Image (cartoon, rainbow, N blue to C red; front, side, top):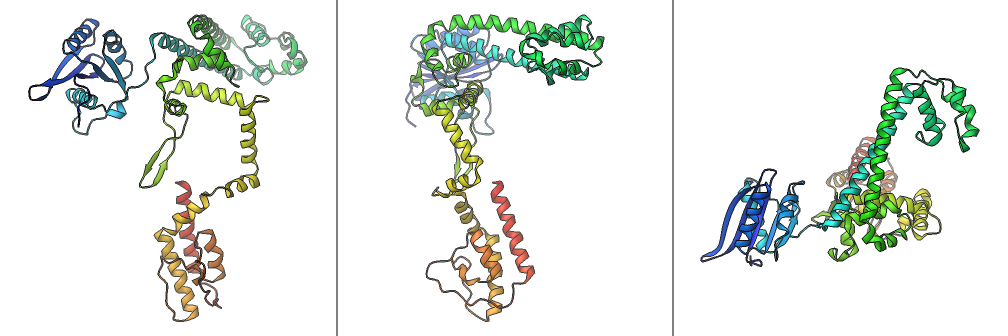
Length: 460
Protein backbone atom coordinates (compact mmCIF):
# COMPACT_ATOMS: atom_id res chain seq x y z
CA UNK A 1 0.00 0.00 0.00
CA UNK A 2 1.01 3.61 -0.44
CA UNK A 3 2.93 5.19 2.42
CA UNK A 4 1.17 8.30 3.69
CA UNK A 5 3.16 9.01 6.87
CA UNK A 6 6.89 8.94 6.21
CA UNK A 7 8.04 8.86 9.83
CA UNK A 8 5.75 7.21 12.37
CA UNK A 9 5.85 5.05 15.48
CA UNK A 10 3.65 2.38 17.04
CA UNK A 11 3.65 1.78 20.80
CA UNK A 12 2.53 -1.44 22.47
CA UNK A 13 1.85 -0.22 26.01
CA UNK A 14 1.84 -2.46 29.08
CA UNK A 15 1.91 -1.85 32.80
CA UNK A 16 5.69 -2.14 33.16
CA UNK A 17 7.06 -1.86 29.63
CA UNK A 18 6.45 -0.07 26.34
CA UNK A 19 7.50 -1.65 23.05
CA UNK A 20 8.15 1.06 20.44
CA UNK A 21 8.50 0.46 16.70
CA UNK A 22 9.65 3.34 14.47
CA UNK A 23 9.35 3.20 10.68
CA UNK A 24 11.31 5.70 8.61
CA UNK A 25 12.58 5.89 5.00
CA UNK A 26 15.71 3.81 4.39
CA UNK A 27 18.19 3.19 1.57
CA UNK A 28 16.31 0.04 0.53
CA UNK A 29 12.69 0.89 1.18
CA UNK A 30 11.29 1.23 4.67
CA UNK A 31 13.52 0.94 7.75
CA UNK A 32 12.13 -0.33 11.06
CA UNK A 33 13.63 0.00 14.53
CA UNK A 34 12.19 -1.62 17.66
CA UNK A 35 13.16 -0.73 21.24
CA UNK A 36 11.77 -1.53 24.67
CA UNK A 37 11.37 1.04 27.43
CA UNK A 38 10.21 0.94 31.01
CA UNK A 39 7.11 2.87 32.07
CA UNK A 40 8.95 4.95 34.66
CA UNK A 41 8.86 8.65 33.89
CA UNK A 42 12.60 8.88 33.25
CA UNK A 43 12.49 6.04 30.71
CA UNK A 44 9.43 7.56 29.05
CA UNK A 45 11.40 10.77 28.61
CA UNK A 46 14.15 8.74 26.91
CA UNK A 47 11.46 7.35 24.60
CA UNK A 48 10.31 10.88 23.81
CA UNK A 49 13.88 11.98 23.01
CA UNK A 50 14.40 8.95 20.74
CA UNK A 51 11.20 9.67 18.81
CA UNK A 52 12.21 13.31 18.42
CA UNK A 53 15.66 12.29 17.15
CA UNK A 54 14.08 10.04 14.51
CA UNK A 55 11.84 12.87 13.32
CA UNK A 56 8.60 11.03 14.07
CA UNK A 57 5.48 13.04 13.20
CA UNK A 58 2.74 10.59 14.27
CA UNK A 59 2.57 8.13 17.18
CA UNK A 60 -0.16 5.51 17.68
CA UNK A 61 -0.90 3.48 20.80
CA UNK A 62 -3.70 1.20 21.95
CA UNK A 63 -6.15 2.21 24.67
CA UNK A 64 -5.10 -0.40 27.24
CA UNK A 65 -6.89 0.42 30.48
CA UNK A 66 -5.22 3.37 32.16
CA UNK A 67 -1.67 2.35 31.25
CA UNK A 68 -1.63 4.56 28.16
CA UNK A 69 -2.16 7.75 30.18
CA UNK A 70 1.40 8.22 31.58
CA UNK A 71 2.81 7.61 28.12
CA UNK A 72 0.34 10.06 26.59
CA UNK A 73 1.10 12.78 29.15
CA UNK A 74 4.84 12.56 28.48
CA UNK A 75 4.55 12.48 24.68
CA UNK A 76 1.92 15.19 24.31
CA UNK A 77 4.57 17.80 25.16
CA UNK A 78 6.35 17.03 21.84
CA UNK A 79 5.93 19.81 19.31
CA UNK A 80 4.75 18.86 15.84
CA UNK A 81 3.82 15.29 16.79
CA UNK A 82 0.26 13.97 16.46
CA UNK A 83 -0.78 11.32 18.98
CA UNK A 84 -3.44 8.74 18.13
CA UNK A 85 -5.22 6.60 20.69
CA UNK A 86 -6.80 3.72 18.80
CA UNK A 87 -9.36 1.09 19.73
CA UNK A 88 -7.70 -2.34 20.23
CA UNK A 89 -10.56 -4.00 18.34
CA UNK A 90 -9.70 -2.00 15.23
CA UNK A 91 -6.02 -3.03 15.15
CA UNK A 92 -6.21 -6.67 16.18
CA UNK A 93 -3.35 -8.68 14.73
CA UNK A 94 -3.64 -12.01 12.96
CA UNK A 95 -3.96 -15.15 15.14
CA UNK A 96 -0.67 -16.90 15.82
CA UNK A 97 1.39 -13.71 15.45
CA UNK A 98 0.71 -12.14 18.84
CA UNK A 99 3.95 -10.75 20.24
CA UNK A 100 4.86 -7.40 21.72
CA UNK A 101 7.26 -6.65 18.89
CA UNK A 102 4.70 -7.76 16.32
CA UNK A 103 1.96 -5.63 17.84
CA UNK A 104 4.13 -2.51 17.86
CA UNK A 105 5.28 -3.12 14.28
CA UNK A 106 1.70 -3.78 13.15
CA UNK A 107 0.56 -0.48 14.66
CA UNK A 108 3.38 1.33 12.87
CA UNK A 109 2.54 -0.30 9.53
CA UNK A 110 -1.13 0.59 9.80
CA UNK A 111 -0.26 4.13 10.79
CA UNK A 112 2.10 4.73 7.89
CA UNK A 113 -0.63 3.66 5.45
CA UNK A 114 -3.21 5.97 7.06
CA UNK A 115 -5.44 3.12 8.23
CA UNK A 116 -5.81 4.20 11.85
CA UNK A 117 -8.46 6.47 13.30
CA UNK A 118 -7.83 8.10 16.64
CA UNK A 119 -10.33 7.95 19.49
CA UNK A 120 -11.62 11.02 21.28
CA UNK A 121 -9.21 12.12 24.01
CA UNK A 122 -10.53 15.12 25.99
CA UNK A 123 -8.28 18.07 26.78
CA UNK A 124 -6.77 18.34 30.24
CA UNK A 125 -9.46 20.57 31.80
CA UNK A 126 -12.27 18.37 30.46
CA UNK A 127 -10.43 15.24 31.64
CA UNK A 128 -10.19 16.62 35.17
CA UNK A 129 -13.88 17.51 35.13
CA UNK A 130 -14.64 14.00 33.87
CA UNK A 131 -12.72 12.41 36.76
CA UNK A 132 -14.71 14.43 39.28
CA UNK A 133 -18.13 13.72 37.77
CA UNK A 134 -17.44 10.01 37.39
CA UNK A 135 -16.20 9.74 40.97
CA UNK A 136 -19.26 11.63 42.16
CA UNK A 137 -21.50 9.20 40.27
CA UNK A 138 -19.76 6.24 41.92
CA UNK A 139 -20.15 7.75 45.38
CA UNK A 140 -23.81 8.53 44.73
CA UNK A 141 -24.40 4.93 43.72
CA UNK A 142 -22.57 3.76 46.84
CA UNK A 143 -24.80 5.98 48.99
CA UNK A 144 -27.86 4.40 47.39
CA UNK A 145 -26.49 0.94 48.17
CA UNK A 146 -25.87 1.98 51.76
CA UNK A 147 -29.47 3.20 52.00
CA UNK A 148 -30.65 -0.17 50.76
CA UNK A 149 -28.57 -1.84 53.46
CA UNK A 150 -30.37 0.29 56.03
CA UNK A 151 -33.73 -0.83 54.64
CA UNK A 152 -32.59 -4.45 54.78
CA UNK A 153 -31.49 -4.02 58.38
CA UNK A 154 -34.82 -2.48 59.38
CA UNK A 155 -36.69 -5.33 57.69
CA UNK A 156 -34.59 -7.81 59.65
CA UNK A 157 -35.55 -6.01 62.86
CA UNK A 158 -39.24 -5.92 61.93
CA UNK A 159 -39.29 -2.11 61.61
CA UNK A 160 -41.53 -1.27 58.60
CA UNK A 161 -40.52 2.36 58.31
CA UNK A 162 -39.99 2.18 54.55
CA UNK A 163 -43.57 0.95 54.13
CA UNK A 164 -44.87 4.25 55.51
CA UNK A 165 -42.18 6.84 54.76
CA UNK A 166 -41.16 7.61 51.19
CA UNK A 167 -37.56 8.43 52.15
CA UNK A 168 -35.95 6.33 54.86
CA UNK A 169 -33.25 8.97 55.30
CA UNK A 170 -35.60 11.97 55.28
CA UNK A 171 -35.64 14.48 58.09
CA UNK A 172 -38.38 12.82 60.14
CA UNK A 173 -37.18 9.28 59.37
CA UNK A 174 -33.65 10.21 60.36
CA UNK A 175 -34.91 11.45 63.75
CA UNK A 176 -36.63 8.11 64.34
CA UNK A 177 -33.52 6.14 63.38
CA UNK A 178 -31.31 8.19 65.67
CA UNK A 179 -33.82 7.70 68.48
CA UNK A 180 -33.66 3.93 67.91
CA UNK A 181 -29.88 4.08 68.18
CA UNK A 182 -30.19 6.11 71.39
CA UNK A 183 -32.31 3.34 72.92
CA UNK A 184 -35.88 4.57 72.39
CA UNK A 185 -38.27 1.65 71.74
CA UNK A 186 -41.69 3.15 72.47
CA UNK A 187 -43.70 3.18 69.19
CA UNK A 188 -45.82 6.11 70.35
CA UNK A 189 -42.79 8.29 71.04
CA UNK A 190 -41.18 7.32 67.75
CA UNK A 191 -44.36 7.98 65.78
CA UNK A 192 -44.76 11.45 67.28
CA UNK A 193 -41.44 12.46 65.68
CA UNK A 194 -43.19 12.68 62.29
CA UNK A 195 -43.12 16.08 60.62
CA UNK A 196 -45.39 17.97 58.19
CA UNK A 197 -46.86 15.55 55.66
CA UNK A 198 -46.03 12.49 57.76
CA UNK A 199 -48.24 13.64 60.65
CA UNK A 200 -51.40 12.10 59.13
CA UNK A 201 -49.54 8.75 59.02
CA UNK A 202 -48.95 8.58 62.76
CA UNK A 203 -51.40 5.66 63.27
CA UNK A 204 -49.52 3.66 60.65
CA UNK A 205 -46.18 4.68 62.13
CA UNK A 206 -47.20 3.28 65.52
CA UNK A 207 -47.63 -0.13 63.89
CA UNK A 208 -44.53 0.20 61.72
CA UNK A 209 -42.17 1.00 64.62
CA UNK A 210 -43.03 -2.18 66.55
CA UNK A 211 -40.28 -4.78 66.14
CA UNK A 212 -37.34 -6.55 67.78
CA UNK A 213 -34.62 -3.92 67.39
CA UNK A 214 -31.69 -5.08 69.57
CA UNK A 215 -28.07 -4.12 70.24
CA UNK A 216 -26.81 -5.83 67.09
CA UNK A 217 -29.12 -3.74 64.91
CA UNK A 218 -28.10 -0.63 66.86
CA UNK A 219 -24.42 -1.21 66.08
CA UNK A 220 -24.98 -1.83 62.36
CA UNK A 221 -27.44 1.06 61.93
CA UNK A 222 -24.98 3.49 63.50
CA UNK A 223 -22.23 2.36 61.11
CA UNK A 224 -24.53 2.66 58.11
CA UNK A 225 -25.62 6.17 59.04
CA UNK A 226 -22.01 7.27 59.63
CA UNK A 227 -21.06 5.92 56.21
CA UNK A 228 -23.97 7.75 54.57
CA UNK A 229 -22.96 11.01 56.27
CA UNK A 230 -19.35 10.58 55.15
CA UNK A 231 -20.40 9.91 51.56
CA UNK A 232 -22.69 12.93 51.58
CA UNK A 233 -19.84 15.11 52.82
CA UNK A 234 -17.50 13.95 50.06
CA UNK A 235 -20.20 14.39 47.42
CA UNK A 236 -20.71 17.95 48.64
CA UNK A 237 -17.00 18.68 48.24
CA UNK A 238 -17.08 17.22 44.75
CA UNK A 239 -20.05 19.43 43.87
CA UNK A 240 -18.08 22.52 44.88
CA UNK A 241 -15.07 21.50 42.80
CA UNK A 242 -17.25 20.64 39.79
CA UNK A 243 -18.93 24.05 40.02
CA UNK A 244 -15.50 25.69 39.98
CA UNK A 245 -14.34 23.75 36.91
CA UNK A 246 -17.66 24.33 35.13
CA UNK A 247 -17.31 28.11 35.32
CA UNK A 248 -15.59 28.41 31.88
CA UNK A 249 -18.38 26.32 30.34
CA UNK A 250 -21.31 28.15 31.91
CA UNK A 251 -22.76 29.16 28.53
CA UNK A 252 -22.74 25.58 27.23
CA UNK A 253 -24.33 24.34 30.46
CA UNK A 254 -27.06 26.99 30.20
CA UNK A 255 -27.91 25.84 26.68
CA UNK A 256 -28.07 22.23 27.82
CA UNK A 257 -30.42 23.15 30.66
CA UNK A 258 -32.90 24.49 28.09
CA UNK A 259 -33.43 20.91 26.83
CA UNK A 260 -36.41 19.19 28.50
CA UNK A 261 -35.22 16.52 30.92
CA UNK A 262 -31.65 17.80 31.30
CA UNK A 263 -30.90 18.94 34.85
CA UNK A 264 -27.79 20.48 36.38
CA UNK A 265 -25.93 17.24 37.03
CA UNK A 266 -26.86 15.81 33.64
CA UNK A 267 -25.49 18.93 31.96
CA UNK A 268 -22.26 18.62 33.93
CA UNK A 269 -21.88 14.97 32.92
CA UNK A 270 -22.51 15.77 29.24
CA UNK A 271 -19.91 18.56 29.22
CA UNK A 272 -17.42 16.35 31.07
CA UNK A 273 -17.84 13.43 28.65
CA UNK A 274 -17.92 15.14 25.24
CA UNK A 275 -16.53 18.60 25.94
CA UNK A 276 -17.73 21.74 24.20
CA UNK A 277 -15.82 21.42 20.91
CA UNK A 278 -18.16 19.55 18.58
CA UNK A 279 -15.76 19.69 15.63
CA UNK A 280 -14.43 16.29 16.72
CA UNK A 281 -17.68 14.68 15.58
CA UNK A 282 -18.55 15.21 11.88
CA UNK A 283 -22.31 14.85 12.41
CA UNK A 284 -24.71 14.35 15.33
CA UNK A 285 -25.07 10.76 14.16
CA UNK A 286 -21.36 10.18 14.81
CA UNK A 287 -21.76 11.46 18.34
CA UNK A 288 -24.78 9.21 18.94
CA UNK A 289 -22.82 6.22 17.62
CA UNK A 290 -19.80 7.07 19.78
CA UNK A 291 -22.03 7.24 22.86
CA UNK A 292 -23.67 3.89 22.01
CA UNK A 293 -27.16 5.37 21.62
CA UNK A 294 -27.98 4.06 18.15
CA UNK A 295 -28.53 0.55 16.73
CA UNK A 296 -25.53 -1.33 15.48
CA UNK A 297 -25.01 -2.96 12.09
CA UNK A 298 -24.21 -6.63 11.64
CA UNK A 299 -25.09 -7.64 8.10
CA UNK A 300 -23.68 -10.44 5.99
CA UNK A 301 -24.95 -11.82 2.67
CA UNK A 302 -27.92 -9.49 2.83
CA UNK A 303 -29.01 -10.77 6.26
CA UNK A 304 -29.01 -8.80 9.49
CA UNK A 305 -28.07 -11.06 12.40
CA UNK A 306 -28.03 -8.43 15.16
CA UNK A 307 -28.79 -4.76 15.64
CA UNK A 308 -27.78 -4.28 19.25
CA UNK A 309 -25.97 -1.09 20.13
CA UNK A 310 -22.27 -1.02 20.89
CA UNK A 311 -20.98 -0.37 24.38
CA UNK A 312 -19.98 3.21 23.69
CA UNK A 313 -19.58 5.62 26.58
CA UNK A 314 -21.47 4.05 29.47
CA UNK A 315 -21.45 7.15 31.66
CA UNK A 316 -22.82 9.39 28.91
CA UNK A 317 -25.38 6.80 27.85
CA UNK A 318 -26.69 6.47 31.41
CA UNK A 319 -27.01 10.24 31.76
CA UNK A 320 -28.80 10.58 28.42
CA UNK A 321 -31.21 7.74 29.21
CA UNK A 322 -32.02 9.37 32.54
CA UNK A 323 -32.60 12.71 30.82
CA UNK A 324 -34.80 11.06 28.17
CA UNK A 325 -36.92 9.38 30.84
CA UNK A 326 -37.30 12.70 32.64
CA UNK A 327 -38.22 14.44 29.37
CA UNK A 328 -40.97 11.88 28.74
CA UNK A 329 -42.66 13.00 31.96
CA UNK A 330 -42.53 16.74 31.30
CA UNK A 331 -45.47 18.84 30.18
CA UNK A 332 -45.94 20.92 27.05
CA UNK A 333 -42.83 19.61 25.31
CA UNK A 334 -42.27 17.94 21.96
CA UNK A 335 -40.36 15.00 23.46
CA UNK A 336 -43.13 14.24 25.95
CA UNK A 337 -45.76 14.42 23.19
CA UNK A 338 -43.77 12.00 21.03
CA UNK A 339 -43.36 9.62 23.95
CA UNK A 340 -47.08 9.60 24.71
CA UNK A 341 -47.90 9.09 21.04
CA UNK A 342 -45.64 6.05 20.70
CA UNK A 343 -46.75 4.70 24.07
CA UNK A 344 -50.42 4.90 23.09
CA UNK A 345 -49.71 3.20 19.77
CA UNK A 346 -47.89 0.34 21.47
CA UNK A 347 -50.57 -0.18 24.10
CA UNK A 348 -53.50 -0.26 21.66
CA UNK A 349 -53.42 -3.56 19.70
CA UNK A 350 -55.63 -2.26 16.89
CA UNK A 351 -53.56 0.88 16.41
CA UNK A 352 -50.37 -1.15 16.59
CA UNK A 353 -51.59 -3.60 13.95
CA UNK A 354 -52.87 -0.76 11.76
CA UNK A 355 -49.54 1.00 12.05
CA UNK A 356 -47.71 -2.16 11.10
CA UNK A 357 -50.02 -2.85 8.16
CA UNK A 358 -49.18 0.55 6.74
CA UNK A 359 -45.53 -0.35 6.69
CA UNK A 360 -44.47 -1.57 3.23
CA UNK A 361 -42.12 -4.23 4.60
CA UNK A 362 -43.96 -5.76 7.49
CA UNK A 363 -42.47 -8.63 9.43
CA UNK A 364 -45.24 -10.94 8.23
CA UNK A 365 -44.04 -10.63 4.63
CA UNK A 366 -40.43 -11.26 5.59
CA UNK A 367 -41.55 -14.29 7.59
CA UNK A 368 -43.55 -15.61 4.66
CA UNK A 369 -40.58 -15.23 2.32
CA UNK A 370 -38.34 -17.03 4.79
CA UNK A 371 -40.81 -19.86 5.14
CA UNK A 372 -41.18 -20.23 1.36
CA UNK A 373 -37.43 -20.70 1.11
CA UNK A 374 -37.36 -23.34 3.83
CA UNK A 375 -36.74 -26.87 2.64
CA UNK A 376 -38.80 -28.32 5.50
CA UNK A 377 -41.86 -26.43 4.38
CA UNK A 378 -41.35 -27.45 0.77
CA UNK A 379 -41.23 -31.12 1.78
CA UNK A 380 -44.40 -30.73 3.81
CA UNK A 381 -46.07 -28.94 0.90
CA UNK A 382 -44.96 -31.75 -1.41
CA UNK A 383 -46.70 -34.27 0.81
CA UNK A 384 -49.87 -32.18 0.72
CA UNK A 385 -49.80 -32.08 -3.06
CA UNK A 386 -49.25 -35.83 -3.25
CA UNK A 387 -52.18 -36.45 -0.89
CA UNK A 388 -54.40 -34.21 -3.00
CA UNK A 389 -53.23 -35.99 -6.15
CA UNK A 390 -54.19 -39.35 -4.71
CA UNK A 391 -57.73 -38.04 -4.21
CA UNK A 392 -57.96 -36.56 -7.74
CA UNK A 393 -56.23 -39.31 -9.64
CA UNK A 394 -53.06 -39.22 -11.75
CA UNK A 395 -52.19 -35.67 -12.75
CA UNK A 396 -49.05 -33.75 -13.46
CA UNK A 397 -47.39 -32.84 -10.15
CA UNK A 398 -45.95 -29.30 -10.12
CA UNK A 399 -42.42 -28.53 -9.07
CA UNK A 400 -42.12 -27.64 -5.36
CA UNK A 401 -40.57 -24.30 -6.23
CA UNK A 402 -43.47 -23.21 -8.43
CA UNK A 403 -45.89 -20.76 -6.79
CA UNK A 404 -49.06 -22.79 -7.45
CA UNK A 405 -50.63 -23.15 -4.05
CA UNK A 406 -54.07 -23.55 -5.64
CA UNK A 407 -53.14 -27.15 -6.42
CA UNK A 408 -53.82 -27.95 -2.74
CA UNK A 409 -57.50 -27.12 -2.42
CA UNK A 410 -58.21 -29.12 0.71
CA UNK A 411 -59.86 -26.96 3.41
CA UNK A 412 -57.02 -27.67 5.85
CA UNK A 413 -54.39 -26.89 3.27
CA UNK A 414 -56.27 -23.79 2.14
CA UNK A 415 -56.50 -22.54 5.74
CA UNK A 416 -52.82 -23.11 6.33
CA UNK A 417 -51.60 -21.77 3.01
CA UNK A 418 -52.17 -18.01 3.54
CA UNK A 419 -50.69 -18.10 7.04
CA UNK A 420 -47.39 -19.48 5.81
CA UNK A 421 -47.06 -17.33 2.71
CA UNK A 422 -47.97 -19.93 0.07
CA UNK A 423 -49.87 -17.58 -2.21
CA UNK A 424 -51.06 -18.56 -5.68
CA UNK A 425 -50.05 -16.86 -8.87
CA UNK A 426 -52.58 -14.77 -10.67
CA UNK A 427 -54.37 -16.60 -13.46
CA UNK A 428 -53.68 -20.12 -12.18
CA UNK A 429 -56.65 -22.44 -12.67
CA UNK A 430 -58.07 -24.03 -9.49
CA UNK A 431 -58.05 -27.81 -9.34
CA UNK A 432 -61.09 -29.87 -8.31
CA UNK A 433 -61.66 -30.00 -4.59
CA UNK A 434 -61.05 -33.49 -3.15
CA UNK A 435 -63.93 -35.32 -1.55
CA UNK A 436 -62.07 -37.21 1.15
CA UNK A 437 -60.40 -35.38 4.02
CA UNK A 438 -56.62 -35.12 4.30
CA UNK A 439 -55.05 -37.93 6.35
CA UNK A 440 -54.50 -36.82 9.94
CA UNK A 441 -50.92 -38.09 9.89
CA UNK A 442 -50.01 -35.86 6.93
CA UNK A 443 -51.77 -32.82 8.38
CA UNK A 444 -50.20 -33.30 11.80
CA UNK A 445 -46.75 -33.65 10.27
CA UNK A 446 -47.25 -30.53 8.18
CA UNK A 447 -48.45 -28.46 11.12
CA UNK A 448 -45.63 -29.73 13.35
CA UNK A 449 -42.91 -28.85 10.85
CA UNK A 450 -44.46 -25.50 10.01
CA UNK A 451 -44.77 -24.52 13.67
CA UNK A 452 -41.17 -25.54 14.32
CA UNK A 453 -40.09 -23.24 11.49
CA UNK A 454 -42.23 -20.41 12.86
CA UNK A 455 -40.69 -20.85 16.33
CA UNK A 456 -37.16 -20.84 14.95
CA UNK A 457 -37.75 -17.73 12.85
CA UNK A 458 -39.45 -15.94 15.73
CA UNK A 459 -36.52 -16.66 18.04
CA UNK A 460 -34.09 -15.30 15.45
